[in-house]
Amino acid sequence: MHLYKVLNTDGTPHNGGVGQWSLPTQREDGAWQPGDWMPPIEGRLRPCANGYHVCRIDQLLKWIGPAIYLVEVRGDVIVEDDKIIAREARLVRPMHWDECAARLFACACAERVLSIFERICPGDGRPHKAIQASRQYALGEISMAELDAARTAAWDAACAAAWVAVRDAAWDAACDAEQRWQYRQLWCYLWGYLP
Image 1 (cartoon, one colour):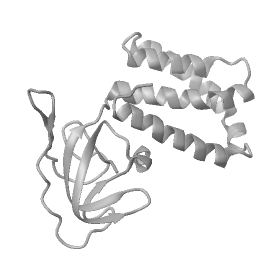
Image 2 (cartoon, helix red, strand yellow):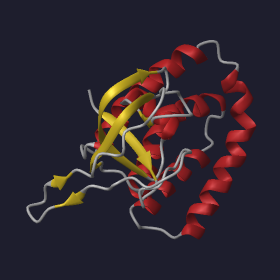
Image 3 (cartoon, one colour):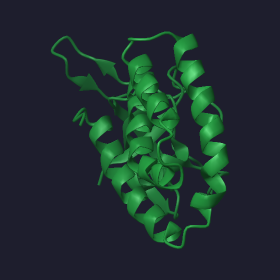
Image 4 (cartoon, one colour):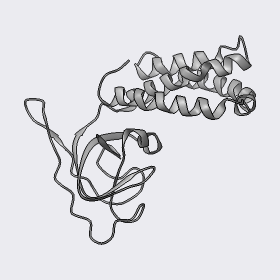
């Protein structure tokens, strides 16, 4: 099972905590040299209080941030619903995740639910145009000003239709199915298998 750690790009915690993680380095042959093992945690491991917090792919969406690393753990481990707490951990290598990948992943997720909006507001193309603009911005094809204009139009449209989508009877089932799709899609982005 692969485990992941979300950090800022400089190796500092993104979702709380203190300190600096030892970052992996890339060798001349392109392979990654893992970072050093972080100092063992003393005392009882406790969620959100004591231990190195990492996650599985199905927990990662809650913790997503600017840098995601493949991580190894050893020693005592506690498995929670939304995280894993370990006594020791080290970063193995960075995943294929940056601002561009994050934007493209968000576009893919938004496209998946666009049909809900289109069912409620047929003929309103503002959200579709915003997704298209976001993708173009991620790929460096348009400016931030052009992206902002598309996003503002889409937000106005989405606010008008949101209450109808929320009361949809199939909402919970659709959310579960969509979350499973998002986990698979996120895995593809992290491992460099872009759809």
